[in-house]
Image 1 (cartoon, rainbow, N blue to C red):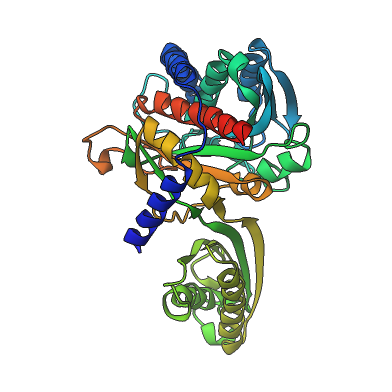
Image 2: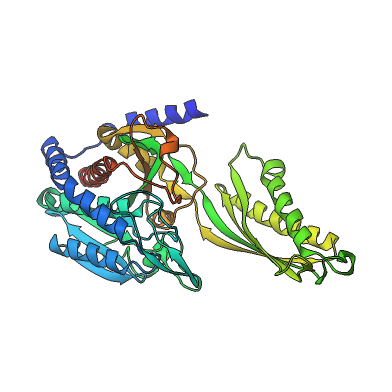
Length: 434
């Protein structure tokens, strides 16, 4: 399968090599501007890292972004989806429209990395006091896109078209009871006037080294659905379990049985799938069998038919296990982010651009999810993964995203700026020439 994917990529690249790309002089000017901006990009990243903000609360970050875009002479809209910022850079002559996106929110994670700009911020999340950290690397995304904005503004007279800069809140999910993220930005007009013809985005990951970019056509990140199960039993003394109906043991049986659905009931040669239970709550004392147990989890899929089948099997498994014990199980599945899908034609057309910037490797499917997927459902999208691990460093020295020890080699920042800047400019030139 891997050889087939590589062969298809090679054929796509061959079929697109003849398309017009940006002139060499413009490419060189972009590279000089990237080099000149790198020190500022690093400073922005460190400032944002030291001052992280949770989803829908990115007030300081949004203000910093808006001020920067306005100083570059862009048309700027703020307050989209609570704190989102949209900047519009119009080139020197008419042409297509391309959008570039960065997410701004941090996570309720207490930082454990020894850095002079480590986060000391604490905030309230869903009623609990928590540490706040850019444990998913969105500080890098914001700084990179601010750098791209500065670079492209410096060559705007040579741009045949328009670049829309999307600084998005709440990619990690809005707080309980709130809306947010890419879907709400679209509802509130982020793609209106002008409407992009394509959208590009990136995510920093430690799976690859600095100087590497990972990408694949089609689905690159999974659809993510939320799972909630309430098991209803009958309370009793822990010494006399036969006088009640124990929802704890039922919940345990459901948890284990759910794992057999992907491993024994689905054709995983078609596409991978994951069901994980992340929390299980019930009871207040060790000698009291509780009345109810609540379970929450996540469902990850790449295929819509498999997604629907998996949902049905989860409902059946949970309710029938509960029924067998005399309990009941209420199952609620909330649709979350769709599959992050890289348009194959767009991916093929832009591979030569990415290869000029970095070593391009094939990305395996990622079971993580991204609400960039909502943007890529509206227009053709390309989402790639930017390596942030120091070359030669063992992977264990760079913990994965969402870890309190997540860290980044900042040498990756100018690679990200170059990649997005050249993708935008090459896309505009390709589609102006058609």
